[in-house]
View 1 (spheres, rainbow, N blue to C red):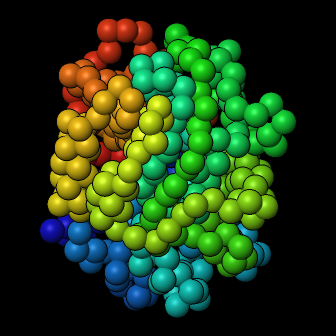
View 2 (view 1 turned 30 degrees about the vertical axis):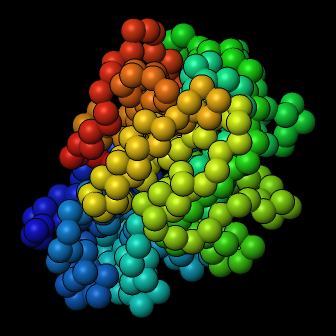
Length: 353
């Protein structure tokens, strides 16, 4: 269990991550919060006495999201405040900020789909062009728009050219496979899905976007408009239950069924992670060339302040492969040359985003 020292230190861990991600305003707020938090407020007491692991639980980003929401409403500006003013903001808005600590942040950055599409192109090159997507931890379902986005990944262009949502990361290293890809059905699940038709929920989602990242807020607005115009297939549920149920469904011949997720693995209980691994292994053992299976993940290497794109597919004895590295919000993607590192994803302690 964490103690006050560990919980307070998590703010510096997050600040260092923000420094690495060119988010100086958010980094400064993290460090200021570490200095001013006390048990005189309910928010301060809850953060300082957090019983879990504060880095994995993203406690710092929970309160930063609430403070950004205040700034967006014009109620208070914690980013321009000195320590005394920040302490006053926390005390004045204690009741409003407290619910932000109830669950992990749901940033749902659409540009993360750059890493996910990179992985899907590797799957398509191995299994064929027709893809069915299953996503866990979908939040508002923005990455379920992956079939409606247009991508330029190191010169490899996929997606409808008329799409209003262009995903063009700074590309490094070799490009992904220029494989034909046709994403058909996309479905997702989240333990607490965000209904962006509700203005309050949409604004909460925007609160989790770092104040430094203006282009992310613009991209978020475009993605939300797309979801409102044509909703995605997103349901509430437990990730492990949902994966097991979806993998048990009949699969169309000639279509690869692919599980994908980004920045969700750390939030799942260990038992859920093991159930999903077991379900994928069992389904992989049943996979055939006519009904193949894939797995694409974009999850953090928190020691190195970067994210890893890993893929695995069946029928094959090929272990999971590390095919790319990426910025946490998809600003850059670095394709890796073959031969790829082959091992399962391992969570690490350290910084998070």
